[in-house]
Length: 196
Picture 1 (cartoon, one colour):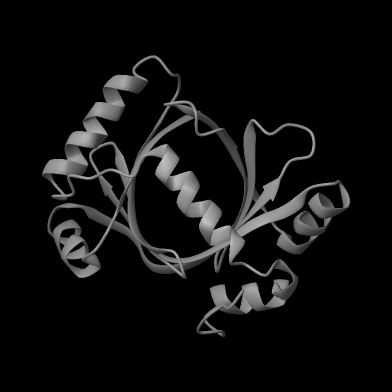
Picture 2 (cartoon, one colour):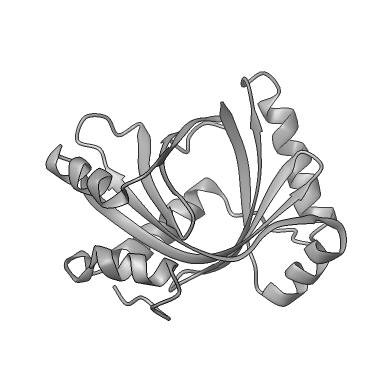
């Protein structure tokens, strides 16, 4: 499977949510998610992530950002702490942790994620999953048009801007303050905020 995805920073969260509520099908609203990004000691051409939510945990592989269509492989895992520990013991290291409250919508063939990202800002991601890369550029143009016309967001977040913003965010994280149990409390609504 391949993911084609574009993003935009959202200055007026409520306005975009209101637009989506009017024409898109809500799939999941106000779900808390923590994503742990790992550095890969063997190959820097892909991201490995562990996504934690109240109802399921996903181990995710994604090709690097330099491609329009990124290969994506995901698998649900039952014991998130075991996977976390296994990766650390195998030489992977935590690069960044992102906590967000996400609102997921479906419109035609697009998955839309409206995100409140702690200490990062609000953003919308529009993506489409395809079997192969054949029409990647055409689909990317369709996503651009959707973001511009249906959401009224003329400015897309470029890959370079995303990397720069993530680097600044990651520099402010104190990884030694990360407590896995606290991450679990956050996604299970037993912790209001996370401070890294």
